[in-house]
Amino acid sequence: MSYKDNLLKKIEIDRLVRTIADAIGPVESGKRIDKSVLARLMTFFPWGRREERDLVLFLETDGPGKTRILVMDNDLTLYHTSVEDVVLRKSPTVKEMVNIRNAVKILNDKDVVISKKAASLETIRGICIGELDLRFTQADIDGIARDGVASLENGYVQGVQEGLMLFAELLGLTPAPKAFALNHHDIYGRVAEKPGGETTFGPLVMFSLVHNTLTYLQTPLSSRDKGRFDTLTSMASGEAEASASGPAVFDLMASKAMAAAH
Image (cartoon, rainbow, N blue to C red; front, side, top):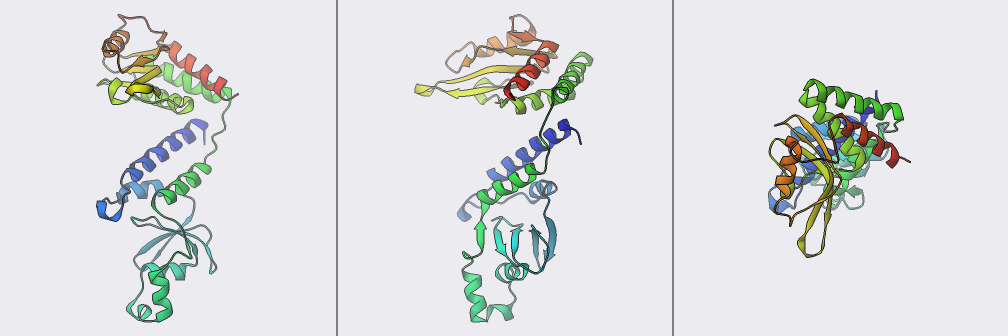
């Protein structure tokens, strides 16, 4: 599998994890994890899947002994014990519950629980990403840039968006916060919080779906600058000069990605 494919997988894993994390809350919050989103995330997870009674389990190693076991429910409980023990604690029969020793286990599982909820989700993320080979070469980065340039020149919007997203991931750029976002424009940059409530955004890169233009601005914009949206729209339309524009933006991001790797 190519580096580009692996990087796209990482971006998808992170997106799914963020969606699930937003649905995790205390019991009284009423929040529930979307099972379809969780199921999509688990397609990247390498542990063996197993169903016992009404439980869906993921096992680090299969066998009769103790192992790490993840239970697919709203708590995302990660255990270190046997499958039989997890089934007893999470889905006991009436006959099992009337046994005093079993009742103690059912009521208190702290001795076998490794983590729950957000902590378990971060473990899942780490294991999923650990399966990906994210090492890259100059040729890998140049290939992403070439694909982006070709997409821009041919008016292939999805291709430009994909290339921009990949370089944003490589360079640690984030989507524009609300104070700098424009409809029908994909904008990524660096966000910084200043004293007194000021936010700055930049350097930034912007793809305008309105004008089919790609531009780069080196100088950060400020949330206190009332003309910041005029700056962005003028840059997208070509009325204001950008630090770089067109195919040169992909070449610039490629050089920055390689420089950041050394």
